[in-house]
Image 1 (cartoon, rainbow, N blue to C red):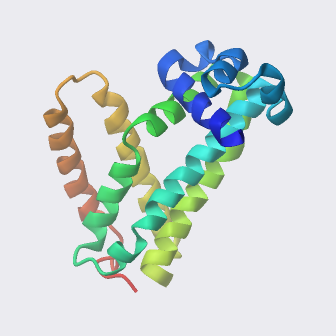
Image 2 (cartoon, rainbow, N blue to C red):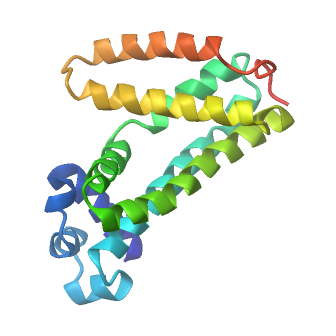
Length: 191
């Protein structure tokens, strides 16, 4: 039931935006009673916070599923950047972006989202440490990882203005080439 509610929350965020996502709408979409929804998530803020955490865990699982493939890659930087790009596609990214944008003008949501964002960043750093070993346990790597994430998020948000996906792919390839140039020394191989 909890999973159905979280999936329904993400769907509603994508379809209706944050302001149009109501607990009643989520319960209807999940096919549960309002009472069942309240039992698991008493308020919209509780529901949305759980959805943000769920989004972070989904991204981590997607990355984890590809760990073996990346560990044997002949291009670990390029393949890792492509993986980050892939896991930011689709409704999960749209829902998380909706929450970030809504947090700009909603103090309660901003507090919730800002409490979860460090968890999301930690997942990225932990993934890098597992893949690149001690080479990723530096401030330089963390800054690089955050820059890669900011670049990906910015490109995807900007893409909503362009109906042609071929432009987006060309922009990603250009950004990836720049990110490759600024990668910390020693990341060309995995441990």
